[in-house]
Image (cartoon, rainbow, N blue to C red; front, side, top):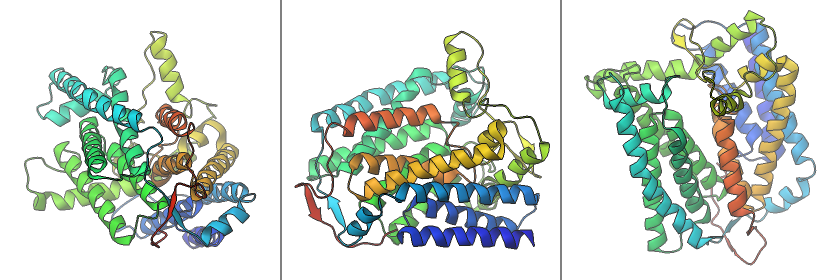
Length: 419
């Protein structure tokens, strides 16, 4: 009975969010559709997994409803603008707000990449693990390891450069080559970060940019999903996480599939254990852990680990959805307030991106990543310092020269799918 009520509630929210804009790109629609699809798959999962309680299921629905409410609040004053834009889809004309600085960022990425790789080789040399990427993963994630340190910002520079090229477009073969090189640099950075989330961030942001520029369709979206699945399988094999590096792809496919299912659904029952634990509220310990770590590092103290403890559901997992840090710190009221704010911010970026603001297209694409991970892992608060860097870089780059639909620098777009 409870699953029926929960799925019905999420289905109603998905319908409301679609009717709000009639656009699949609208963040609250993505949020509700994502949670609806995830919970449908979870309730009918073809493998053994712990069941969530009614209280936890209600919290999931309340979270999506809060995100929806925030989106509706944000759109309330923007409705006339959105109706006008729906009748005349446009694309911004290719052209850089800061062409020389864009080239500088590309050269800076080229300079930093060898330094990043050298640091990776040095980290591997500190490990006893035989596999190169296995050793790199261990040394870059252990609490007492120095990791990449300050040079980790090199990947932010490269990713930002790639996003700028994708957003501003290319007008000739030379700029197309520059964009291709920047994309290659970012992919190499992501590989040496040994994290699948880096690959997903790159793919999600580029997909968001393409969607808002009306350059995305169903075929391209399928290719993006396939690219991520291939990278997921490759990392699972190379790092030995659910797959055997010495086995063939055909032999590893069942193990990779099982690992993907566990990553996809393990966070739901893991969060249920948090709910059933009834622990006292921690008031900022989880949501602001990134700031606590930074302050402890500057103070010369050992920072708290950013890696969550493992639990068994019945397989081991240490991901707990995006709701956990807020729920642990502030309870259900904190979840409601926080996700109203996040929903409003996401919808505001969407609406202003629809109006042609390049800065808000960029913000929309960055916010798409933690949104897509919300049912699987926390990427809103665990990486809050990373988002501050990306948002500050985007604001400083685009705020100096806003290019919007309705300005002289626009051309009619080919009609495309609103995916």
